[in-house]
Length: 317
Image (cartoon, rainbow, N blue to C red):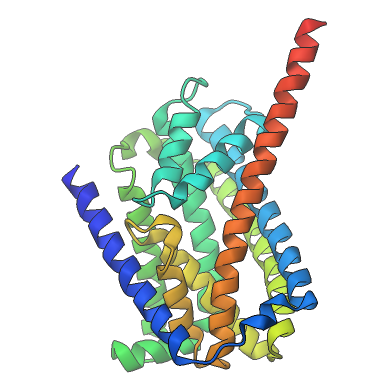
């Protein structure tokens, strides 16, 4: 209990510090907010929202595949996606882990153990974050190393970069695992070491990479409606976006990575193009993320209601 309180306090401090950093920058520069109301910006924002919403359902499908492996039973996607979307909204609650806890609560009584549900959540998160982290470091490693050289005094050679990548990946997994510290590793070890698990891991990683590539296309169109950027600039910016998303997820006690995600993105991407554009995109990204989460949640409720109604009709017949 005390550990949870400490994590929440740390999370609140980080959020406040991040918001202070962002707000100070917003007040320093003259930003043309009217750009966000241009028809072309609205159009590509809607496209990005649609892709973001669909990607949430793809993530739910990936979680469903992992659940089937852990529970050794066939689970209908119609059971999984309402749970995933309802729990996803809970990430905005204080503490930053209620979306994962919510999965266990919502699937309780469906013939799966809490350990199986939690284990599948760990794997789903790890695969998603690993995929984003790998692409982020691939796209933005030069600027990341430059930042480390300036602020952390890390030499910019390949071996240090590889070591850093491995350390970050391990830290991501450990943080995620500690969120489920009641899990018994021995009980899940057999599943983790199975051939089916490795097949599932790499196939799901491939799905995530495809989703990230499609998302990058819509993001490229969106940012170019605000400011023309070169492909090389865009790749670094998008890499910074992915890295900030990973850091937002693994930072303890921060609901939905709010503040942390934005601060990291601005800090890394501010030297790639005009800072005003980066700040505009930072605000727009958060609005798009929240909108996608809400739409996915509402669609799940509607589909679940229609599904329950059709079942009732069949039962009456």
